[in-house]
Length: 396
Image 1 (tube, rainbow, N blue to C red):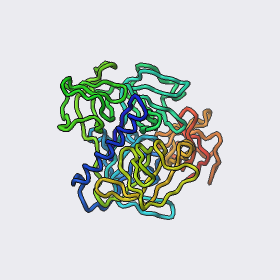
Image 2: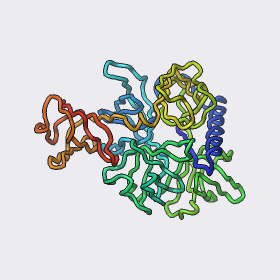
Image 3: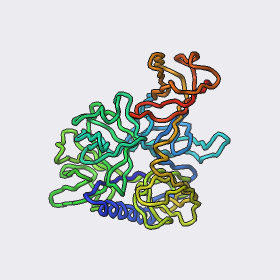
Image 4: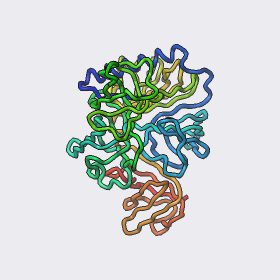
């Protein structure tokens, strides 16, 4: 389910808007907005690896999958369209549990950009990036495109970036999962919750941005404060007042009965059995909880597994991870080596730069590395977010 959020001026207003939006979604789907008879799976999370593609702890065979952009248009499959840290939604076959992990076949992969536009400010002390009036928190799990050597410090006001991110209901910021340089976009994009709607002036706010929608197409007939929206903005817009070119569907509609895995931050919280993740309503009244010392609360990172019913996720299991677990996550990439640089002790697999200086080697050694050789890499994100630092390199 696609969800969109907003950056209000105060924390209470932020949480209230997200709670209102979540209730609205539940009511919408409860009135027949979702089909029945789902026989597949819906997974919304970040990409954490490649063999095929790993999303939400599931290895999806993406060989025949269609990849769609934010407007639902096909993206050319060139091997670089899916990247570590991207937020995506996957529709696929039933998830199977095998001795090597959970697997499924992806039919459709939708890329979910949170913000695409020019950088307004870079704060390397608090590690906050401001884009289109939205504040993006950078942390140890934020992946940066390989050209951004140094991570956040490589960005400057005026650079145009695509940001994949989650809303933090506690801080009122987005938590960035990936930042890429965007080369020559024909339009800017923004996902968020409407506030300060003025239907006479045809204007609204999302976070710190004022949007004019006088010339926009696809304006929702029921446009209202607290509503989740996705907008495309003209690239000629000024920072102070952004012009909306078009509204798009804000919510994906997984079928009733579909198995589902949704990872992200708790965006509204009523109780441990009734909350929302990324704006998707969760009924956890009969779920098994796996947690260490962190309890479910607004702003906490969770992974919820269950099935879809009337637009809500009926949870079978809730794993409470917290940001610390996300910062320490392990990535896996499998494929043929290219771009081997012996001096720098790096190579590339599936467009991911891998540093192997501290790696343990299995079925070979560093001297066996060569372009075209197939390897499986396990590792963690480098300090600047641009590489995977391999802890193990296994020859295939």
